[in-house]
Length: 81
Image: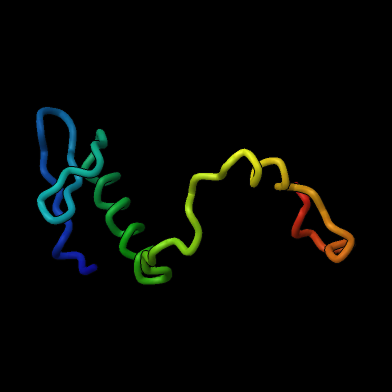
């Protein structure tokens, strides 16, 4: 995503950050809005968005097993909370 897809528009006393003409954030200062646009650009360059491999919803059965460490995981931090 390039910087030209972002815009900052003053609406009343606030500044609205837009991406592809869609409002995504409202802040009180133009400087803060510009800083957030730059930070978002850096994040997108470092780690582009990709589809999730696993669903975000965790069922009851999955939640009951989260945090438990099996014998094979002993000593690893994987099951630690």
